[in-house]
Length: 82
Image (cartoon, rainbow, N blue to C red):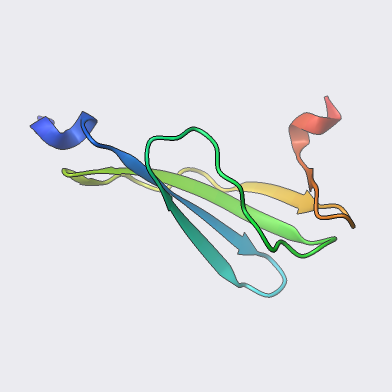
């Protein structure tokens, strides 16, 4: 059974981990559907995952998504190649 707070006042955590340095950045957001991650290193591979939280607690982390930055810091994702 899901408690009353499960779908109220939710937020999310976005975690970005550099594969080479293993440096992790975790961003906490309200219910916005976009986030900007600053200070990414050029030509680097990152694992990204997200999870939702509410007053009922945190959900499980999503499956990792792997992305690589360009030399300018822009993302290359698998969807960019379709």
